[in-house]
Image (cartoon, rainbow over all chains, first blue to last red; front, side, top):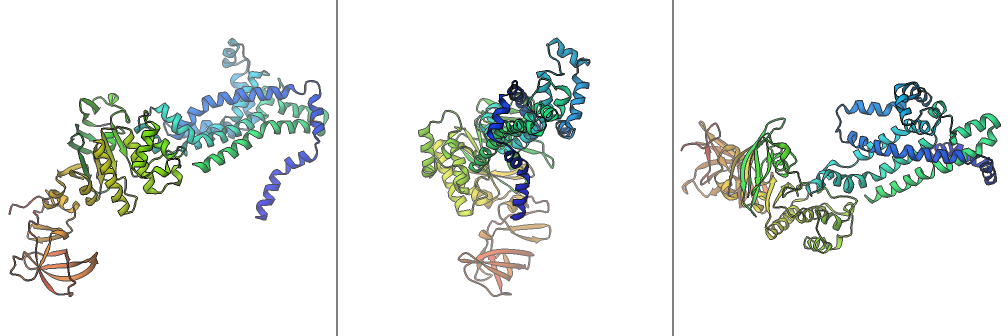
Length: 250
Length: 322
């Protein structure tokens, strides 16, 4: 019990230290500086867009993986885990090699008026690559926890595949999906390594923290760190509490 | 009418069956674990494709090996399936589970639930139900799907025996009232006899015999069927084997009353109000068998028995000529 308490306090230590060094007025003052609010808006918008893409692409993929409906399932899983195992800085470098302006993909993107370097699009791309494994792996586990016999029961009662998914699979996987989505949101909001390489501009919150730290020091960067936590954390914590409550009901 | 004549491939052996089911008729398929009973039901319910043959329900071809893409999908072929695992949707209440099939009104579902003794549980979630209650909900839900044929895959096997038999009676009442034809698979003869108008004995994917539930016990077609319907005593004489059913062997007070078998008592066990004697045949027939008696006996006592109509088989397990 005491050991567990020590570990718990140690894990919360950085957050406690941050709160101990900050007053609410310091945060307000920091956000009142000219241009200080824009990185927050940029980060939220980019993360929302990244999350939407991840949700649309990752959900079917996670379901197919959970139900072994794809050939060579392990190979697909390795593909999903790879961005998780690759250091974020390396992801950034590889994204330049893959989709930078001088590559065939970059050329194709330019026809759509998109550039994967120092643009809002590049920021979204970097956030997707840094956070997508968290969603797909979490969602795969959520779908795998739904008993396939229940899906079969729904089919036997006349449901089509889509109706079964909507009425049985999705509601039962919802607590796990919510947790996966919330973790992904936190990862996307905090994406830094790949962003540093391919999307230094436009400034998101993590870049703002980094540059402020470089230019004016730790005390100036701390308020922005708190803002990032305040924006990134409530969703995961809320999702965790809701999913724990929903699991108890089932 | 359901007409099934098909083969389904399995790893160990294929299941090859041919049978018909009249509207409202109840049949049971009896067999050991792995005999192909569940495979049969899954093929009927549309969960498996056929490797040969066809399944028809009235004028509608449900499945055909030649055209699997045209199989009527599960849930739309008028065939329901109730399994041992009730498979209730845990996020829905009892009444929502019963109403799961489209077009079931709240009042109809509530009435169906009440008829099965679930009136007080309609708002409960499956997590809080006992095994018997969960099976009642599953039964109510399956009946609300308005199927013409209800397949029952040992639905009450995980429940204790008295409760299982009580639910079987409930099931019987419900399918009778709804006029639904039903196929029960089970490995318990007692269950099959209590439920079905005809019983088929299945072994290694083949129907060995199908007929009247009592006739099946009195006249098993092969030694294999005899074994599956409860013949536990096997006596041999030369190349012939006599099968003895504990219920069909009668102890006599002496050898002059038409005794067919003489035997010595080698053991005995109380069996309800009666005593089950374990006996070793002496004389023309050799081997061990059991018999229910009204009184205990002394170990080593010699007794005489009649076994009228006891089937005799040859070494291949087929009925012997004499």
